[in-house]
Amino acid sequence: MNSRVVPRAVWPNQSLHHVLPSVRITSAKRRRMNYNDDDAYDESHNNHNSTNNGNSDKAEDIWNGIDSIFNRIMQNIKDNSYKDYPSLHRVVDYNDLSRNLSREELNAVLRGLNDDTPRNDLISIWNHVVRINRDGMVDIINSILLYVNNFVRNYKNGKLDVKEILEELKIDEKSLRLFKTSSLKEISSCDFKYYNDFYTLLNNEKKIEDIKDLINSYMKFADDTKKKIYHNYIKQFKESFEKYIEKKNNTPK
Image (cartoon, rainbow, N blue to C red):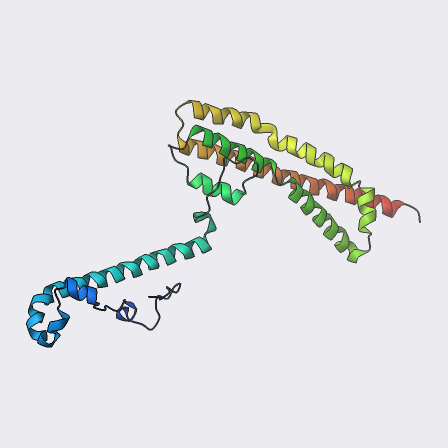
C-alpha cells in the first residue's frame, strides 16, 4: 500500500477501512487453509472446514495492516517533531573541541545531562561553556558601531559627518582592538573561581543539578558582564560626544 501519512491530517475525508490493505486469498493461502481448488464447486462443503482458518488469516492480515499504519503514523509524528525542533534528532558531539557549540546546542546538551554522564564528558561540556562565555565580542563591537552611526546621523538632522566624529573620538581599529582585549579580561575575571567550583563538584560525588546550576550561574555572569561592557562604552561615547560638540561650538569660526 502506498498511502502516505499527511501531517496534521491523517487521510482526510477517508474512513479507516479505506486505507486498510485489501485482503486477497492467494492459491498458496488456499492450500494453507485446506482449500482445494478442484472442489471449488462444493463451496458450501469446504466452507465448514476452512472458515476458522480463513477468519484467522484475515484477522492476522488486518492486524498486520493496522500495525503498519500505526507505525507510519508514529514515524510521521516523529519526523514532523524533528522539523519543528531540530535539536531533538541532532546528535551534538560535545567531545569535538575543533568547533564551538552554539548556545542552542549547549542548552540541548544540558537538558540531556544526568548523574550518569561521564566525568570526561562533563569536562568537555565545561570547555564549551568557557568558549561561549568568551565569545560575542565581535557582535558587541558591531552593535556599538551601529549605535554610534545611527546616533551621529540622527543628531540635528544629520548635520554631522560620521567619519569625522569617529576620527575625533578615536573610534578606530586600534582602539576597538584594545577595547576587545580589556573586555575579554573583564569577562574572564571570574574564570578561576568558577573553574575551581566546577572541579570541586566533580571530585566530591557530583550531583548533576549542582553542576547545571554552576554552569547557568557562570553563563549569567558572562552575559551580565557583556551587557555592562556595552552600556559603559555607550555611556562613555555620549560623554565624549558631548565634549566634542561643546568644543566645536566654542571654537571660533
